[in-house]
Image 1 (cartoon, rainbow, N blue to C red):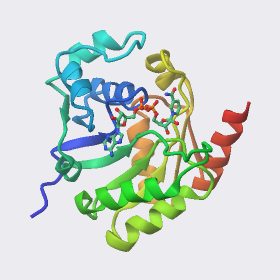
Image 2 (cartoon, helix red, strand yellow):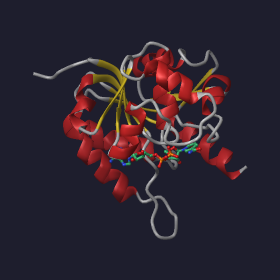
Image 3 (cartoon, rainbow, N blue to C red):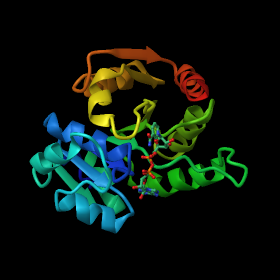
Image 4 (cartoon, helix red, strand yellow):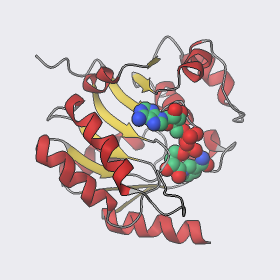
Length: 211
Ligand SMILES: NC(=O)c1ccc[n+]([C@@H]2O[C@H](COP(=O)([O-])OP(=O)(O)OC[C@H]3O[C@@H](n4cnc5c(N)ncnc54)[C@H](O)[C@@H]3O)[C@@H](O)[C@H]2O)c1
């Protein structure tokens, strides 16, 4: 039996510069949020109400939500227990700093066993054009009911708590239902939402990174 929806959101890599502000922001909006991260010392700090890095305005909100709507876990099985699974691990690169799809594929192969068919997997790491579709193929092969969306992060470190609500959010996906569900989720943070295809979102991100 699959333990479902104990959490609204599971953020994989939620101890990092992008994942933690996002997790705190969802938790502060009342969403039951669990951070899954492999860095035990970072999770210990978060559980103690301390930000592991400087992020303006985040400490106070973290202390307000931790142990209430925000929890953490070192155990990947928590992935099963959330409706939305957000991936914000760092983008793997090779020795020439080119994107290393092999490492990304290995990561998704590892999390597939913890996914179930009613979930929406939201990719938020920086991805290169075509990667969202490749990830969707890997996931669908094993868990056909899981929907994959790409909602790129665009914040500047240190300013996340402001920018999460002041920058438009890009939402993209392959099915109308999953896009609608993700719009509803991100609408908690901002009403300014731009819907694109996954490829358009990937290209938009690359052009922002190049400017
Ligand atoms: N930092 C920024 O300002 C920024 C802005 C926009 C986009 N991004 C993108 O966001 C993504 C994340 O960047 P970041 O700066 O938050 O990285 P980060 O290194 O600060 O955080 C990544 C987190 O993922 C965790 N992690 C790694 N592998 C894991 C695994 N297999 N399972 C669970 N947790 C795992 C790490 O322990 C770490 O806490 C990257 O793709 C980056 O390009 C970053």
